[in-house]
Image 1: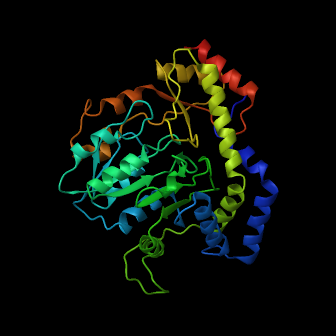
Image 2: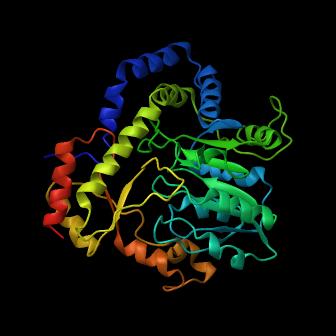
Image 3: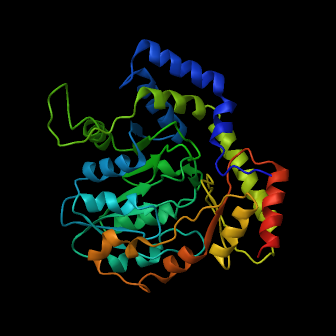
Length: 365
């Protein structure tokens, strides 16, 4: 049985006629940059999350960069974040001369441990950058309380969790600025790189909009130093069409996750847990397993693709060597890095495929 990890081909086939018609229309009218598709997408994204403004941008990484610039963080400042994440959450501040200060994760949801944040604050701390891992946000209300109490800005890196909720509110409405990614394999993905920033603060929204156009206020007038962070019209058109069925997509991903967890119960692996008051967009279905690398190799031999998100904590990456960390500094991150294994996750997995994956996994534990 052939299993596709993210099944992007089926994602396209599901809305193929609409998407291809929209892309041909853009090719014919030649409105490739900042066209009506982009502004339409921004309106629809804001309506989907239910509060504030949305500004579409060129990637999840540029979304983080824009958030940091908009909040006025500067070289020498510090931002508290997690070492268990894709590198962009720490590399974007570091590129601007801002020091990432790591706080370990909770073992149940893999997200930053709020209880450890305040002890990591120094006079140089200006923000908390919280990452929503595998589709589930951290305790966003608790993080907002900490940020308010400590007079810090709060950035939510929701690259993996667009559509997830915390106490019935979309994760994109929390913090000073929330970001997401529309990388093709994300729950809502485009056909290249793409992202968005969200804020309930109109002044920040105007600043973000300017910053993603090289800091301009009007053509060739640049009050701010910004970047080329625009989303192109082709990607916006794809996202607008896929957004129409996104709630259904999330429901189907949730059903796949529930079925995995039911079938894996009691077999010696730790299944993912969604904490009370939260929902997950299930960007990944990630287990903790014994002998992870050997198990992954056996699954691959049975034509079951897997992935490791992530095999090395950021505190141990060569590019952050100057921070002076060593093995043992963040034990929960290091334990997770040795145990996590992501199974195929997409809304098109059939019952037969799920049962095959689970049975093969059980047979090889």
